[in-house]
Image 1: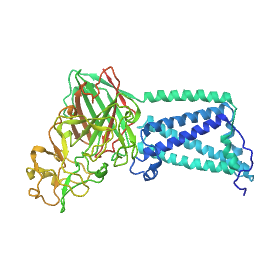
Image 2 (image 1 turned 60 degrees about the vertical axis):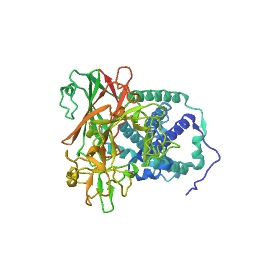
Image 3 (image 1 turned 30 degrees about the horizontal axis):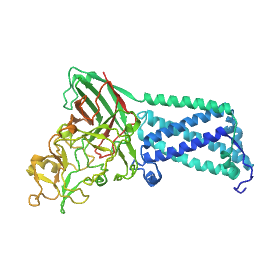
Image 4 (image 1 turned 60 degrees about the horizontal axis):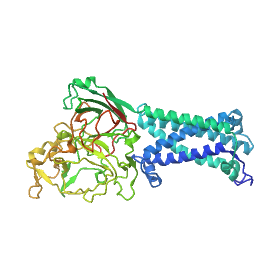
Length: 552
């Protein structure tokens, strides 16, 4: 067997077009790996991605990944064009002769044929990765998300294996000199290179146009008969309102994804919205308190790291922005510590914030904490905040609009994964009697009569003397202090769960006059994203492209 060393001091040259295309391909592949694997770390099942988290990029990686992936596709188009225009396609032709050479006795011929075969393996892997990526980006509802996503990830790892195989095969064919060929350019095939540049430019323009077309429009029609906000959606106004269905995915407890149907109307003063989505269970078991022999404990699995996916209420999120950038207008920053000098998120997933001092408007419906008070929590994402020592959780730029009264709070003095001290107890123990008979399995739904909250006026301050509840008693952890007043209470809402489907109606002034809210008008484009939280704290479903609201 021939030793794998440099056989000649002479290093052959490679045309400069191939050199440039090769290294641009390498750079885009490398960047795609660093961003794509970071996105994969957001899934709790991907332990392999978690293992390499320390070397991956952090920040707006979803946007970066889309850019690098599109650049990769354009480079592939440019390379194919170059080979055809320069008539160099025979360089990679795997014809009958090449197939015979795989069994040739001459090692040089056999290695050359093997390298051509490896090229074709790369063509298949890269092509399949681009196709699955395009489906995830442009056609997320075409096929089951988990099938396409898992296939995309497997292809990524196979491409990593291909890169190693490619280097080994090149080294085997010609030693170090063969590897250094790609660093030794010569001018050639200028016309073919120019053609490749033109075609690549056309490809980039086509991708940009396709990207813009992926933003659907939702006409917001004027109505003379405003709908009643009662969660029933049986008003005439909704029958005439155009609808858009948004395919969301990647939410925990919703592996198949969730389609959200949205309708909106207005009466020149108020915006009325209707959101509908499927959910097999109505989940109200929001961190219930259980009496044990040692004291009260919070029923939870990962609430201590802000990643509770069992004992949590159903929620729904809506985001409005004047920027149409994918993945929430550039507010989703992934990583274990995406902001230097600021606290790391306890769950290691990332933070929401803006990087240009702007704000985006966020509606956060919480079925137990705000839904029971007939409201959506009016929030926003803004620039990263300074840490608040009085708060256990650092949320980046995610916070609430100011309020002047009302709201909700947790029924404990200080959270602990072991034993906590409640702040309040029921005035009348009979008010929580029905909770003693509910199923505590998070996968079992709750009935309309299962009340996992207590009004503040129906409680008394906690004392050991009053705490004569038996072991096993279940008590709500949510305290209602009345409807939220001020900016935070601008959005009134009512929801109803029936036959495996949530219907959420809401209303808000077209222009609240608050700097924390966006006005819907003809002057400024407004884009919307939605998210389903299926009894999960933070792992909501998501979608890349927004829907543009168009006032009619």
